[in-house]
Image (cartoon, rainbow, N blue to C red; front, top):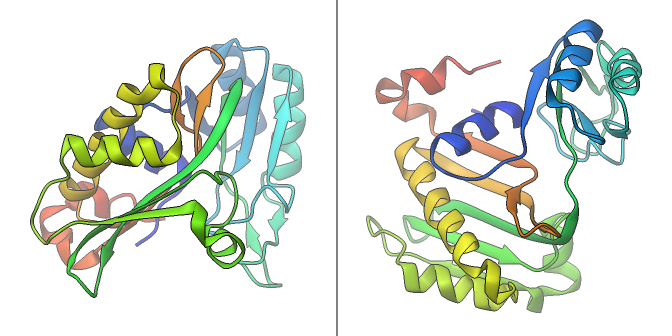
Length: 234
């Protein structure tokens, strides 16, 4: 089962993964109120559909006032968004997510997946944040770092540190990225996720580390012990 970005970020925040402040809306009035409450100079308005490639399809808009958030909401809500993953039929946008803008310094990619070959969790990381990982794998595979964990073993701090080194994270931010990786693993195992992807994971000019976008897929066979997750089904 897939969930929306705003739901994924709520779950990740629960496990200590830092995300930008934001909230979901399903009307222009709600969106404007969210923007006013955020009180930031820049907001990002994102269509919430079960498909990637929203940005290139016009489903992500950067705006600079609550009034502009309202205009963006009016354009997106009840519109049809067509991306490479939706096919030509597209998907109707019923909800949007409004969050504070981030002063991005650098973008990374990180995901954790259940590897059906090893039955363990594999961590995939790359310096090429913001790009589709399949495209990175095809064009510049040397920029992808993978770590395969043994089944039923936790990721160790030293392994998380090795990932930050491979990514070339600034020394003053390494501890924050390590903590994020450990929190990501905790979220993965605690919710019976099949995949968690953060793309991009960003560092900001203010020295923050944030999950700027997030996707989570769940194992429906585990819903007997994850009823709160099952209730997120759209």
